[in-house]
Length: 534
Image 1 (cartoon, helix red, strand yellow):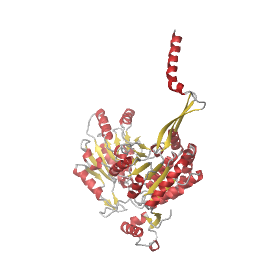
Image 2: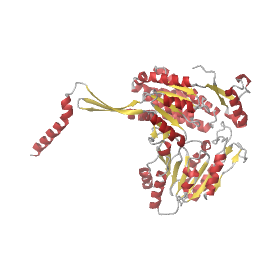
Image 3: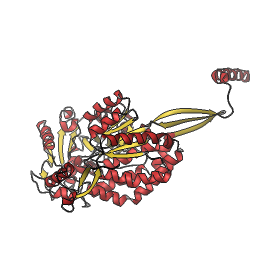
Image 4: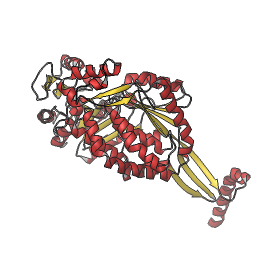
């Protein structure tokens, strides 16, 4: 759709050199106080048309018109072939996609991680799992019985600001169920979403012959776009990424408007480290807490350590945390991202220390080269040690997701292992959030205890990376404050569809026999059994 209003994307390197000047330039461009031809070279890398309410409505209407025709496509086309073609095209465009993620401020290693995760989402093993869930068939006498999932209709997706491109691709799986999709590209980082949907997904839909309106993407402010979706009678589901507080309020608005809310909110993930854990590997996995400066929803947020290994674990973690550094996003070793406003980090750290936590490492702002500087736009990876589980949740950094590179390690009070096992399980299950949880332990009985009894969360990993992607397993979703009252592991193809049972009889069955025949057959079988016994 044509537009005379634009959202401009500031190059991440320009932001690193002078954040204030770059953001001022962006505001001037978007307010019309500066013309594009007056731009200094290299600071702006792209622009995206900004949608008004009328354009948003047109996108929903186009999606509604497309739904019936797109859903009529055979499952083999809109799931198997669509997914395989997406996987191939995404692989072809991987380098370009990574370049755009770099421009938007994602460190190279994390940009590659996001693209590899998207490829896993459309890989053959994942597609086979989706297929197994969408249709199950059996034969019952003359009847062909099937249990299948049917699309909800028009699905609208509001991705987060911190990972919009990968979240938009995750939402694309909703189209495999037969839904049409409307995506809002966030104003803070719209370029990657627009690129991947326009250059990767749309050409595949065109190759399949999908109707126009199957995929729609707009860029606009969240509040008016979300309100338009809620007000529209054509919208069926809304996938919402955001804070838990805002998400719970939005859930109520969705239900009141007759929409299905699919929430992807805060994480506050827990990692358990048992006494026989491989501490070297566990500490390495825990440094994932600092990736992206802690501004990822699915990273470790709190550690529950067995008292026998706490000191060794903390020492290893501090050593590895010092290796996580900031700098230019193009540097292979960079994993930290700028934090332009850090007052909440220091308030959270002060709260932990005031409650008796011990500062193990970090705790300062710094420049890109690691020099401590109160004006620095990076934060040191920070570890605090909390002694005792009993009062741990009084500390803000334990109770809630921090979204900063701040990781509390909770040293459990000494007790028999049988007691500690139950306390650890209770602690994890009592977390009001529920995205991911991890366990590090070698004893098979201990592992089985945790796997059997930890019920909260959308994903549980044992002796593995906390954030690594695996085929067939969910990347998002969870319980409690992570996913709302309907929260669970988030497979959009399943969350945006519903179960329907179907029975087809080729030759026709007498209705009276269908109603009463089962009882009569049971009685006949009983009589035949008695005769055989005699």
